[in-house]
Amino acid sequence: MTSDQQPTTGDDPYLWLEDVTGESALDWVRQHNAVTEEQLTDNERFDRLQSDVREILDTDARIPYVRRRGEFLYNFWRDSTHVRGLWRRTTFDQYVTDDPEWDVLVDLDALAEAEGENWVWKGTQLLRPHRNRALISLSRGGADAAVVREFDIDKREFLAPEGENPGFYLPEAKTDIDWIDIDTVYVGTDIGPGSLTDSGYPRLAQRWKRGTPLSSAETVYEGQATDVAISASHDPTPGFERDFVTRSVDFYNSQHFEVRPDGELVLVDVPEDAGISIHHEWLLIRTKSVWAVEDTEYPTGALLAIRYDDFLAGSRALTSIFEPDAHSSLEHYTWTRDHLILVVLTDVRTTLRILTPGENGWEDRPFEGLPELTSIEILDTDPDVSNEYFVNSSGYTSPATLLHGVIGETEPTALKQAPAFFDAEGITTEQFFATSADGTQVPYFVVRSPRSEPGPTLLYG
Image (cartoon, rainbow, N blue to C red; front, side, top):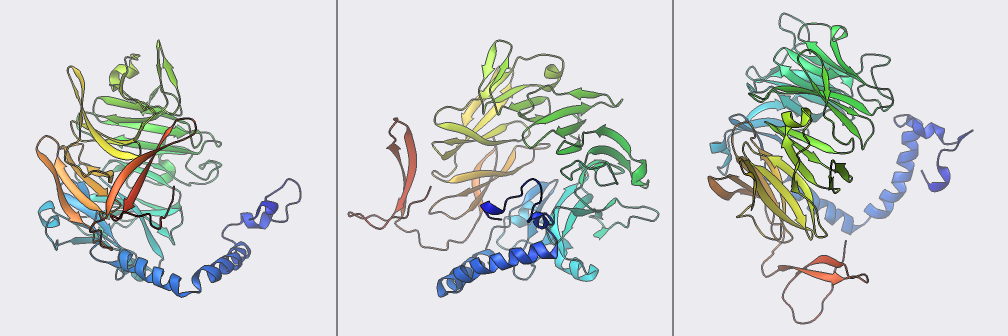
């Protein structure tokens, strides 16, 4: 829709475009897309780029990234043969080999063909700690709404929603669901008028028992129609079992409640625009605006820590474990069993730190052994059991590399590396700073081959 075709009050000649799945609206989109596609694709350069990109995407030499769940490493894999994908798993010992043996749990191409559905994988949730059942979400054609079906991993089959041992099943909707135990889930979905917010997401969080009609599910929390969404979750960490409800008031503000066994809702009283996470006895709060607490003011972008039970009891003895400055900001963080890993951008260079809580406060030390001048992402940890981590690193001249280690036991070791699609021999990466008119130091990178005279330069920012 162009600027002169925006919806207006009163008679709107373009109101029919609001029906985003209607044939008239889709025909309008196709007509406009065709103009762009003709101008951009009808040439040899596009054909060459398309061929090169397809080669990169379809190569079997890509890294099969994994997530540890118990004793197995799980992966969802797509290639030119398995267009919809395979959900599969293997052991760590197999994974480190050049040609791992994969145990295929769900072949989505075969399932779609057998059921005559245009299934697209939307994710899965494994039951903890046993991990013998999964809640698998499948959408038709990649839509936001998805069907949820329970899968028995030991038997390699979906459980029928009826019968002696019925499986959890939810028809197509924008559903939120989480395991409580093998016979109980938290669910928010479309159960008729009033069950969704104005945004089309769950307005109710309910506790649903296996083998009972969804209409009999117990309502745990009821939000407002004007909220974005309501969700409920269960933390089964041994010794720290807790239940939570999150009320997303809008896209930037949320309220968090602990659900006590007697049904009481206890507000986790942090700013509504702050992000929180709870691990074992710790509550972490990530501020998104300045927060004044008693006599202390915490800046935007800080990460604060306090024992969760102390915070609920009224203590505000917060420890600031990260605060941004003119050069650094927190990109993300994740827990292992005993340590907190921070991924920090310092002058847009990725640096990692390891923080460890102890009797004398939080120990803070650099994460050693990682490649320099690369973008680094923490892919997975095993926070219930160990200090293991999987890290992905990639740079301007180095292909993606999957590293693995255990904090305090082993150094980062490369497990897999993506193929290099160009020769980086002799190419260097350097960082420099430009000084703006107000004195700000603006970082930038130069990737080049050694040469004494100026050459063609590609600039982007």
